[in-house]
Amino acid sequence: MDEENSEEVTNPENEENPDEPRALDGPFLIMPYERDLLLETMDKDVLFISALGLGMERLFLEHLIMFSTKKTLALVLNTNQLDEDYFISQLRKAQVPCEPKILTAEVLGKDREAIYLEGGCQFITSRILIVDLLTGRIPIQNVACIFVYRAHKVLFSFQESFILRLYREKKKDGMVKAFSDVPTSSISCFGQLQRAIDRLYVKVVKFVPRFDDNIKHSIDDNACRLSIIDVSMPDSLRRIQRSLCEIITVCLKDLKQCSISGAQSGEEHNETGLRAVWHESSLERRLGDRMCYLNDKQKRLLTDLVLLRALLKISEGMDVVTLLTKLNIIRNDKEMAQSSNWLMSTTAKKLIADVESLCTTTGGETKRLIIGPPKWKVLAEILEEIKTIPVQRHEVPETGPSVLIMASSEELCKQLQDLIKSGEENLMWRVTRQHDRGYLGTEPDLQPLWNPEHVKMLYRAQRKDESTSDLRDKVQKEQKTIARAAQRKRKAVETLFTSSNDGLKQTRLLQFGILQYKKRKNERIVDRFYTATLSFPSVLLGAKNSSWISESEETPAKMVTSLVRVRNWRMKALPTGVPDGTTGALRSRERTDRTCKLVGEF
Image 1 (tube, rainbow, N blue to C red):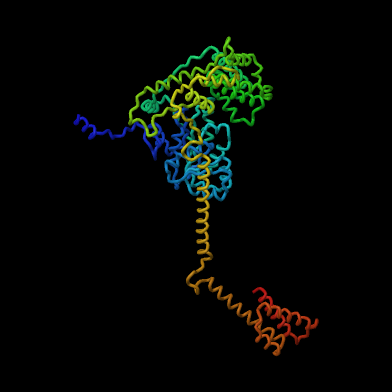
Image 2 (cartoon, rainbow, N blue to C red):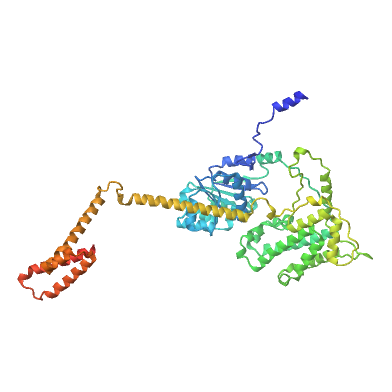
């Protein structure tokens, strides 16, 4: 035993497997096929089209980490607020050299100019970027790449295409990388992929399907254990779901008939199939992007489809009392009753009758409880099975073993929490009593499926990390501080260069240079003008007044005033017809005029 233990200690398996996922820049895992795609398309203009569920966000995040440096500027388009909050939080966890930034209409134009020069990944809206490109506010030579998230939306908008066109005209060697995880929107129609390529100005298209050998090998090596359990439903619930599916199918056909794009496409099986009943169809996605151009009938049908799918999910996972409550709210709404035609159909009447029959509690002499959905019993069996699974101590985290149950809505999560804490019988007794308001006997005992003290519901506000609003406020405050500091530095540098290079002025050699010669020459001219103000009035006024002017300490302004008075007096003293002997007086008058003019300019 000692030799075996020594062999295990001395020969550990420390060699890394290149096919295993590894972490880059922190806790982020990257799959082998994603690493190959990243290295293959490092310096190319590429459009990634991935299948749903393969984690396109992870590949997009790795590109953002690669361009998060102060030496490069990367712009991110087509992201909503949730996307920005997620990517910014992940970039901050990765401790990238340059913090990400958010540019919206709240950021001033001068601040945006300074933020562009800071580099890094910057999330910006399309309208702001168009304005900055047209006004020349953005340094286009610093933009290394433009990332287009949800690239399939380029087919239904013009702003991103116009931005990329301006970018290509001003910088031909710039990179464009687009990402899309909705392949049906990109290659569903003829020529649609070519239009997307033309609008994105890319040269390479990379498909990331599930059946690729590298992708399949990477997923199979790290596959999770998956168990699918089929739940049998009673006939009454089957009739309810069948009625809802028929109404949804009719609404989809009406929507296809009243829309030009749906009538031109020949994919009727895809628009009205079983998948379209439970999930949003491609026609609904196309019309949802053009909501402002739809008529009243199309908008009403889209609203009805969303409402009917919500009722279908309630009938599958929640009790029938909740379903009946939702139907009564719809029936009592006057606007909904007038606009929605499916409420007047025979199928809707059968649906309401079946739901009301399941909610009746009179079954003979005694009242009976309302039956819960069949999924609840299966959940109780699974939790009992989990309790019997042995867990090793080294596999248990510090918080202890945990079971995570994910649901489609918050209302469903609350009902499942009540189910696990009190049991199915006690919960349905309370639901029946709330619906019937009658006497049902004594309340059943609590039969919790798990320890009630350890059952918790995870809300978004209960997350330990900072909330999204605090994160956005923090990022905006930091980038505003950085922008103002950069503006002050740039202004200080500009003033330094302008003061040092203002006319090539010599700072130390005061008696050298052309400017200094001009300055000394002007000073001599001023001295000569001042001497003239003392000499010329003596000629005009005589020797008796000259001594008063030379001895008085008058300012130059007062002297100019006295010169003007002398000039006016001399003009009045001279006759209109001047004889030949008065040339000296005329010369004195001209010299006085020139002196007054020069002193006035000085």
